[in-house]
Length: 151
Image (cartoon, rainbow, N blue to C red; front, side, top):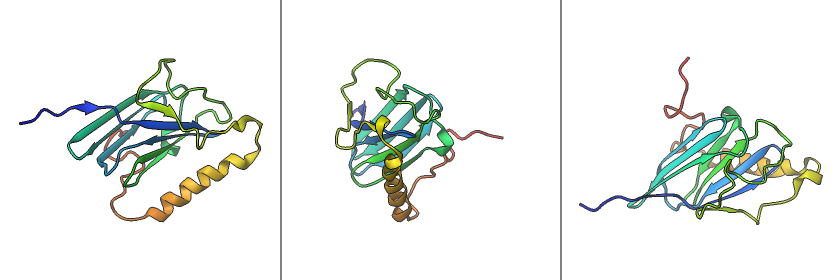
């Protein structure tokens, strides 16, 4: 019996006017769970024999019901809607610490504070990608059984 090691998944993030995007770089992920709360979120998955778990206390608050995630063969992408649109996030985490597993996605980063509505094109592309993915293997984007509130 080999021991199972749980590790943090490598992630990249970038900021936009109304959203924060986080991409967990895990290939061939299975059993993906994304639990969203207004000030933190948890990502878990399995890839091969590796188990990943990331718990993030967020810099600002998000709207969990308006936030989404999607899985591809190469990564899991999360689109977190900011509770306070138009407020810049200088970092993803509440803590000012440097995390080895987290980096800025400079390919998608831009100084949006001086821009008009141009930044919505990224979200539109993300939404279109999610709509085009289709299929029955997509996780429940509303949180499903995991983290759902009972009424």
